[in-house]
Image (cartoon, rainbow, N blue to C red; front, side):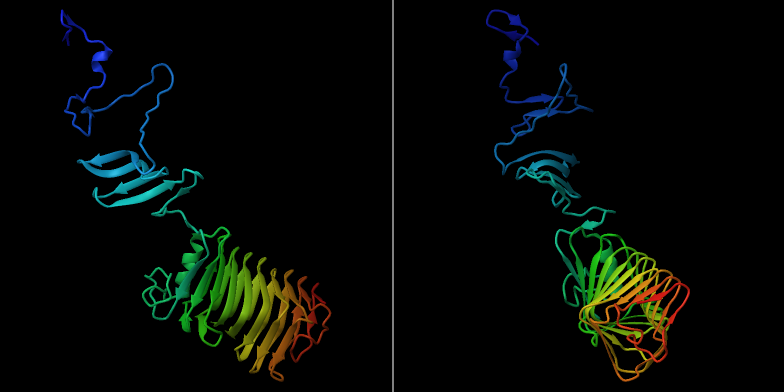
Length: 376
């Protein structure tokens, strides 16, 4: 290329390429795309050391971004879109856009408005799920209505167990009625779950299973209140490091093996609770611990209205501990309602009534201490 300088045709200097209205390389530029390149690739490289590509905008409310298109239709965008946070957006049609990620300009924290596949949702506040007999497990469980609530308690528990709770807790509010949960309501331990199952009242809400009522397995923190639990074999079973808290009014129904069991480092705590025994006939144990810990303390009343016979009202074995603070726990039973052996402490198990005496635990047969067990 030569340029006439008034006297001769010369090779133009850089001054001749300044302030061009547009530049098209193998294509045509226009008023918007003042630099246009049509090529298999575009190379921007260093001139000895660094190389930085700068995309600048005039004000925070403007946009400075990289836009990727398919067939001239937008599919992805990365940049400062409408503010000074970093946004990543995607689109399937170039018209509707979904924000996948936002990085806050002040804190540097990333949020994922559309969620992350395969990664638990992280709570930023306490969460409440609702369960009703007229609900559906296809709902999201977040509103107390037929169109919003879950149908089964198990669905709500599974949703809660799939969350990363951090410092926050999940409450499941269960409406009136009987909720049959198959073999049992299973609460898995995931190490960060703090969950409350709250019914409409021990006489109004029942959770039942054909084998167990509620089984909690693994490290988690579960609170039960204002409901009834029924299971053919075990009513409430805490296992493998689980912590279970009974509060308010809780009724225990059926359960031929044990009504409340704690084993393998599980802990069951009963405080400020009316514990109703809605079971008749016979069962092996009311409280049974084998390598676990059961604690009954302040404000606990154990209420029995119908006769029931236990192999032992309280059983502690295999280094298990059953602590029932005699000065704080009242047995409000109908006369002779609890029959059978008062207690069995065996296999280094300990039953501690804090000095309430060997006749404190109800029953019609004296307690037994064998094989290294202790009764205090």
